[in-house]
Length: 78
Image (cartoon, rainbow, N blue to C red; front, side, top):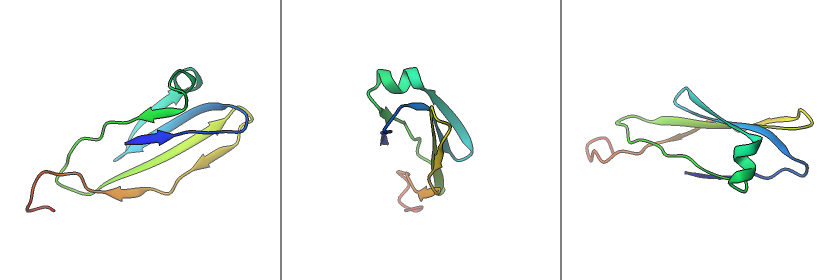
């Protein structure tokens, strides 16, 4: 999954949560990747959820609603 990040000033951090497991990206890593984060998602035989929360250097926080998705090679689960 690729996440494109933009802010009219500067981002402080972004957290990506997949099925309750959070991964935090700090400003230096976001800048290094030019605001384009690539997140690997593992296959599972159940629906998973992803959410993203971003905070800019002014302290404003934006959070997406969780999105449910299914990634599985199992034809019986599909």
